[in-house]
Amino acid sequence: MPLEIAQIRRRVQMRLADVKRVAAGRREQVAAAERAYMVFLPDVAVPTVSAVAQSLSAEGYPYRVTTPGGAVRMTSERSSRTYVEIRLDTTGPLPQIIAEIGRERGSRVLSDDQVIGEGLPVDEITDEHVLDVLVDAIGELL
Picture 1 (spheres, rainbow, N blue to C red):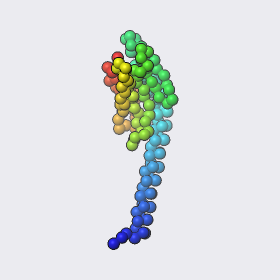
Picture 2: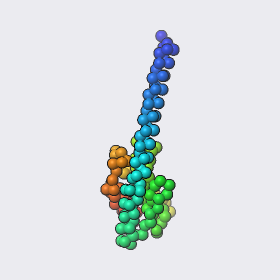
Picture 3: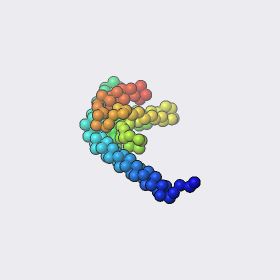
């Protein structure tokens, strides 16, 4: 026995309402993460990355810090293809702060992404979370 058009239409309407509700929630979540990131970047990420770069430079591993397009990037002065870049990623199911670690190995450039403060909202990520990721990455950057 075929379904009635009214039943089909009711199910389609219910699904459309669910999709719209989820999309609205996602937009709100991304907007909140972007607002929190605009505070996190200059107040937490840039000072922490700058301090690590200064510490590495003092140890004979010169790094410079730049802030390209809504991110902070610490780049080796010996190879521009060796770096750590911290940025907001809103493409996944949850907005998260990512540290992209790039390193040169011979003629190849390898890069990995690591989530900073996994599972935490952006406004709860601290300089300790950033420092943990940067210190862990040192072995790959030298």
